[in-house]
Length: 237
Image 1 (spheres, rainbow, N blue to C red):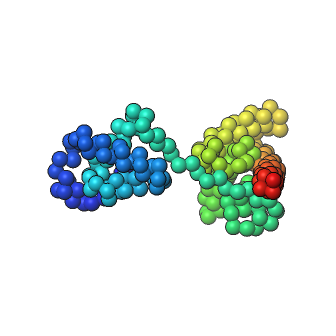
Image 2 (tube, rainbow, N blue to C red; image 1 turned 180 degrees about the vertical axis):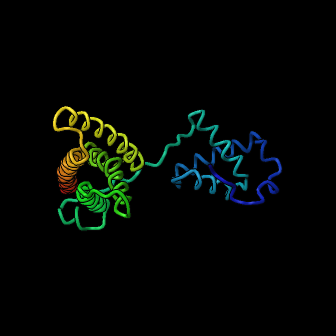
Image 3 (tube, rainbow, N blue to C red; image 1 turned 60 degrees about the vertical axis):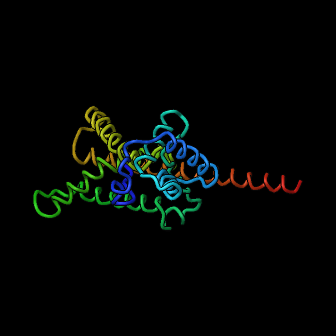
């Protein structure tokens, strides 16, 4: 929701709630001109430019812009997130400061801690609570997160981080249920069995996600090189 730029806007514009035809026409014409020339990135920038020109209240301008949107004269859309570039080398993936390195080391650390804590039988104390926190985080987040990463290896507008986290929780529950059913009819449903099986599934999904990301990164890099070559040929011709 946009807020007023000036605190005394109501005092400055006593008739804000009523928009005259001439004012609405001015806003429409000037907003169209601004969109064609200056191309503001957000509604906030557009509103501020109109205020600088005509000194109208923000409420009036927003009201006219909403009317334009309803009449399909103005199209508004959410900004698309900038895709995160996939790393091309192992060093870039595991050791440079980027999302993928952070994701990998967090997942690996949680897997190692879970592997250790699963086999520690404690009933009280610090490790008792630590075990529940780490194992719960692993089961409810990490298991589904790696599976989601394997399904959607790229970080783009198709699945944002918040949506990815929500999907990870849902997929974790599904994986735990299916894994529990499988163990119940095969090796037996025990704490070590469910822990080891989920660790194996998580590691497998993590490896698959890494392989797919490297493969996708190479494909994207080849496409960029082809575009550069084609552009060079066109310029040469």
